[in-house]
Each structure stands twice: as structure tokens, then as C-alpha cells.
Image 1 (cartoon, rainbow, N blue to C red):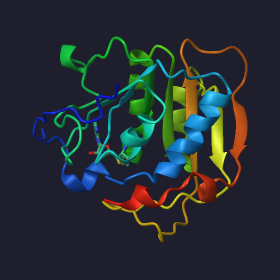
Image 2 (cartoon, rainbow, N blue to C red; image 1 turned 45 degrees about the vertical axis):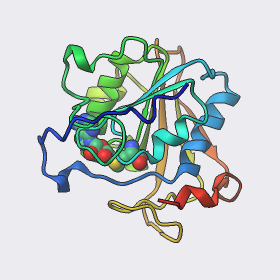
Image 3 (tube, rainbow, N blue to C red; image 1 turned 90 degrees about the vertical axis):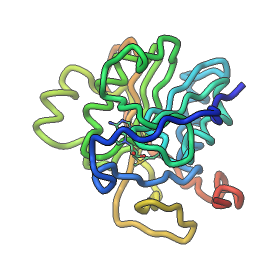
Length: 212
Ligand SMILES: C[S@@+](CC[C@H](N)C(=O)[O-])C[C@H]1O[C@@H](n2cnc3c(N)ncnc32)[C@H](O)[C@@H]1O
């Protein structure tokens, strides 16, 4: 059962201006590429519960519902999907999903490190964040995140994943490189594995992905 269409929504609690919220919908094929890899590697099972904590208009969470028994959808703002007004970085009783197996999202880029750390506190099985590949560099992130919590795997897209502010565009293009950073909880022994996601857009993209 999916809770992707939670029937109520709290209106936005405004911490940041809309500009700063970084609303870039994810093309569903990019989420399918992750989930197919997680399934193939026995990282996820259909009974797992997933929380998409920055769900925007639901482009990623609806796709996650193809793979997970339940998908919780929250966002700090409300874009017509899930529950708005929930700041994932704020620790409060209403913001703890004790049954959450996986946290999967495309976080605002300037808060991706905080999302990773918070996700690692909440998820029982793992965290997967779609990030710009440049997320992997930076002394601050190295010191605060990667030395203590290196990802179990980095899945680098061989194709570009076009993302545009506020809209999904089937004909869009981008100069930005993206990857999935995946953490298992508890942490797996060993070094971060680097994998390439082979070209898959043509096989994973569906016409209806762009219906709204
Ligand atoms: C890059 S968009 C991704 C939207 C959606 N995950 C997708 O992939 O289609 C980032 C989202 O993070 C939300 N956001 C920003 N700061 C947040 C916070 N502290 N807690 C929860 N959501 C936040 C924004 O409102 C925006 O919807």
C-alpha cells in the first residue's frame, strides 16, 4: 500500500525563501535507475518502508511507490503532494519515522550534507541521495561526512540527468553531472564502491512520466 497520496497537507512553514528551497523535479527514469540497482544488489525489498523527505511535487516519491510497499512524502514546502511544512532537518517527535527503512531523495544542493547526516540517524537500512557529482569534493564535506560516514556506493550516471527549476522537461538538457550516493545502515565494512549507471534513459523513461 502506498501512502503517496496522503490526504491532507499542512501549508508551508517558511524557513527559506522559495528561491532557496531549490525545487528541481527529478525525471522518474533516474529514480528507476537507482531502484533497479538497489533491487539487483538485494539492498531493498518490496516490504521496505521508504520516506521521501523533500518530495516536492512527487516526481520521485511516485516512482519510489513502484518499488516500495509504503512511501511517506513530506517537504518543507507544499507543492500539491504529501505533507508540507515538515523540515527534515528539524528534530521533533512528529519528524521521526521509526519504521523507515530507506530515506531516498534529491535534496536541496546546499543542504545535501545535512540531509545525509539526518538520514543516517533516521533510516534503518539505508539512505540514497541524488546529488551533483561535485558533492563528492570539498574539505568541509570530507571532514564532516566522508571521513566518518563514507557512502557504501556511488552510482555515477553515464548519461546526463536534465533537471530544471520548478519543472520537468522531456527535452531538457544540462551541463551538470549527477550521481546517487548510497549509504547502508548500519555501515558496511570496506571502501566506497564506485559503479557507473549504464545508459538507461531510453529503457526506463515512460511517456506518462511527463503528464503533469
Ligand atoms: C531538488 S528538489 C527535489 C524535489 C523532489 N525530491 C524530486 O526529486 O522531484 C528539493 C526539495 O527540497 C525541499 N526542501 C528544501 N529544504 C528542505 C528541508 N529542510 N526539509 C524538507 N524539504 C526541504 C524543497 O522544497 C524542494 O522540494
